[in-house]
Length: 116
Image (cartoon, rainbow, N blue to C red; front, top):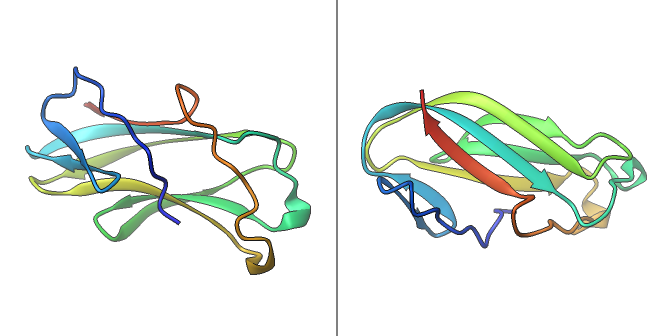
């Protein structure tokens, strides 16, 4: 499931949000920082909750929520070309429990791409 509801920060003038994806106007080397915060702690009884960071339709990384935590941090270098899309998705490996977590909106959930 694609994470939705992102808001662009005014200081990132060469990045636009289109269809809940960051779309780049210029090529560059970036440091991606992503934090996903849940409304409550994760209980692994309900499966493995995974967050994937994507470039276009290619998975860059996948990270799992740890049992008993409510936030997951991802950091990695990402190179982009004009028109590339960077976005986040989340899934649970146990299909019977979908959806089984609610993402907390606001400052606790973000995807930032800073030039390296």
